[in-house]
Image (cartoon, rainbow, N blue to C red):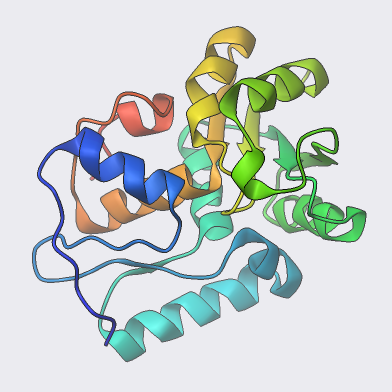
Length: 204
């Protein structure tokens, strides 16, 4: 069983490490939700296989287990989204980026993928401002939502700005994963800096 780590009580403190440092875990009651496959891995195996993998790991560990790409699907559906633009980091190659579009199309979405190829290729050099600028310049007119894919794509800090400038719902890999954990564990936290998805109380 994965080692358990104590969580901080304040939602802002809890939200920031999990959103900006993938793979972190926090306790909620009796279980420790475990982030697992990254979007690129989920893209490669497809939604059905990813669901089987996540469910199998959950049964083996006796814990809720989540995956970023899998988490984004119910989040988009919760807002009635049909058309979504996927934005991937520059270290994704074209084939991997297109696997993302295929993944979401298989879930019934009108999905188009792109790579933010003018951003730094080093994840440590990526900053929210340039991410927001790139996305706002390239989003489709008909897109209803934007998904910033890739857990190493440190784009959570750009979510609020992109939503403000585009009027679209914006999901980010680690943000969507946190949302799914909150839904699974029926927790609500005061997280106000990472977009509409985390400002709303999880359903249930």
